[in-house]
Amino acid sequence: MRILVIQQKMIGDVLVSTIICNNLKAAYPQSEIEYLIYPFTKPVVENNPFIDKIVLFENTYRESKWLFFKFLFNIRHEKYDIVIDAYGKLESNLVTLFSGAEKRIGYGEKEKLLAYNVQVAHPHIPKSTDGLAIERRENLFKDLMHGTPIDNRPKLFVTEAEKAKATALLQSHNINSTATNLIMVSILGSEVNKTYPIPYMVELINFIAQKPNVKLLFNYTPAQSGKINEIYNLCSAEAQQKTDLDIIGKDIRSFMAIMNECTMHIGNDGGAINIAKALNKPTFTIFSPWIQKESWSIFEDGTFNKAVHVNDFFPELIAKNSTKTLKKKFEHFYSFLKPSLIFDSLNQFLQTHLKN
Image (tube, rainbow, N blue to C red):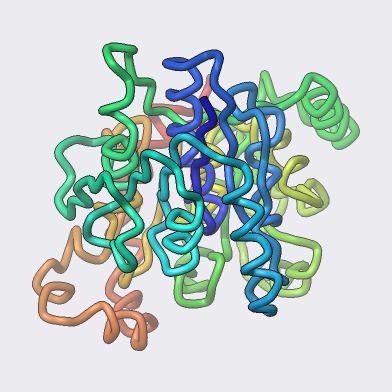
């Protein structure tokens, strides 16, 4: 049996949707599981033993109708038995429809072209602390499991060589991750409107740095080094002394290996937080005002994984404004989420997970 799972989106989405592949491989070990994703998200699924083949949706398929239709015909030629569309956009609808698979599964709410002959629910209210992102994906495959237990935790597979390289990098900076509380901080979000105000973030960094036996790493790309240095210079002398800007992941795989050595992850919502969760690291997440925490705060039990949102403190403020307004005026709504509102929950989180 050949199964194609489609998830053309960002790193967090691709990582979370691997639970579909992982569980179906467990239920049907002789099947061939293929995963259709964007090329830039490939690093988070590399070395996954539950995925037999990664199918890349190249940028050129969006730029050229001819190349896109050629891709569709190649998909049809593969003769998949089951296609599961976790993306639910026009492109993935077309891929699902053209596949000709006997069973084509997708969210009924996102049906556009009569592509799905098996439609499942796309709920908007979570039933558990697993979160909507997990519960929605479970709906896509749970009826195929036939009694095989479901493991709904996304996983990453860091190689021994990658682990050794990360350990050596830390040791070259005189950091022993087994003895030190190594904290990864995502200061910048994937977009400006997903980034907690820098003056507020600096206050949080200074607060964290007051804890004994901590070392801070900032999650950023080399292209963001100028902005990161500006933020670093705003931090207290103590925070600067406890921060090492030279230890960064130059790509996703190296970031994963470094994150694997860390004690916890704190910062803006994004792919890095989902990587940390997949590595079973405690996380403290700050959500943008326009993002629904219910959708992406997965496995938030208030202890191992905690999250904060303006809605936690000012629900009436969020309720009376549309997502469009919240996104357009994100700076205004972010301003309500002052560090003083976060300190207590952040302190409790740190006290719970700091070593020694």
